[in-house]
Length: 128
Image (cartoon, rainbow, N blue to C red; front, side):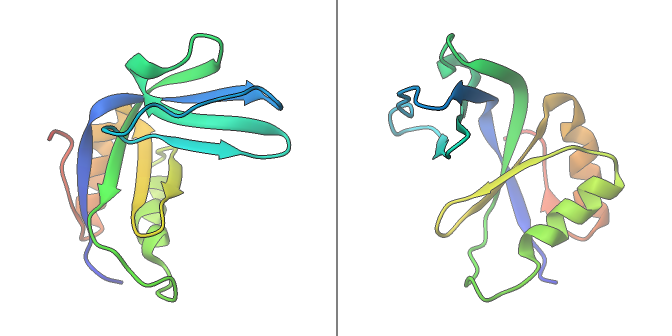
């Protein structure tokens, strides 16, 4: 598995849930956000200070960006990050854009996550 470089994003994040049919708009560009609309619910991941008050909010996440980009045919990229985190007992919220993967962990687990990732052979830090 390739060596990965994970960089923290500067903000604290919230994972927000909205009932089906609730109109939701992602925050404007400039910070990482993710909007997923599915049949059963809508989820928004955004900086905590931009979390809509009407949402069910799970606050206090730190977001790590995997700096390298890989072709879709390369297997095991996320597994190489998620496995050591799972073995360390750290819960995650993982997501991807077309060319970049992101892994969120609770802020209280960020230091432990960095240690687990380093032990697995990756480069990671918990402060930008």
